[in-house]
Image 1 (cartoon, one colour):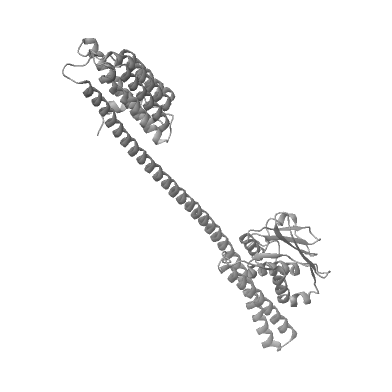
Image 2 (tube, one colour):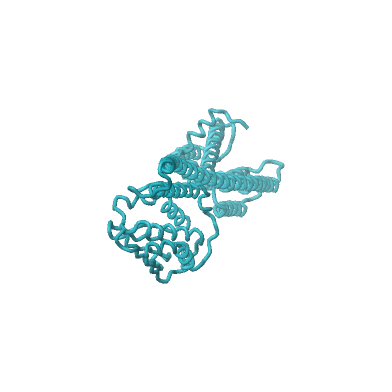
Length: 447
């Protein structure tokens, strides 16, 4: 059914604007506005008929119509639907009593006005309020029945009073059933709409979460691409230098061989070629490490003794430890839940750096210890007596492809350590002072 735009504007005028996106309450306020307006229009017509003598209806429309108008403006001002409905139901209930007394008591057609409290309470109020109004109506009807007399002059000629009674009762019962059906179907519709709204909100949240995840992945990909691009320039430069050295000293060795044969100078040149070749191989290996998958972040983590990883790494580095006459001391280490291969990479990088950045005049001394900290995490410390790290470089050493000063590294090792520890839900940091060594700390979940 299409309503006249003028009528819609009137209904919207008396509908308060305080409900926001609460569609169910807004719908109820619009329906209530429409009902009150219909009652007002009908009341004005019936009131006019009574004044003109067309009808002898005893209902006090001269009271009801102003009350309805006041309630419409009260609804617009406050938006208190239950209060307005309670008032209109109570007023109709009370105002109808005198007209019933004047028009046949239990046989009065004005009993039909009591369908209004039933209708309004079913649609807008809770079931307990419906029960109160129905009980009140039944009490009034019972009272009218007790005081009714067969000689009531209002009863029309040749119409038995039982017809009035059954007609009124049947009318109220039928309308009550229809109202209940309407109310039940409307409640079902509202519940269905609420369920659909919850489903849509859930889907919206899921899409929002996926979008945020995609944005994060896109940002990570952009950062990774930028870092790879930076490394490509750095690697190109690092590859060119040893290749130039290899070409240059190969030519010098060739020239010396042709002129003077295998002299000491030839062997010196070949040593330079060998060293440059090693440096070139190291650069290529580091590039390949970075080109591999990002540590397979979801690799299986298991509970194991951390000393196993440390012993494996110490065995691999045994030649370097012996070469630099390094002393390694470690205390009992806790069990952790981690990926064994990745943690061995962490130990390998940190111990290799401790050996690499040693003091020339002093043998390396490295102490490894571990304990359970206040956050219930295993905290490992690798402390050395090396050259230390300047304060301005502490925040840069974990940056990927970041080379500090004249360091011979490629800026990958510590960045890899950071990625691995972060993947395990831990943290890694350094405490250091120039000339007094460094202490690298990292945390892992306990086993």
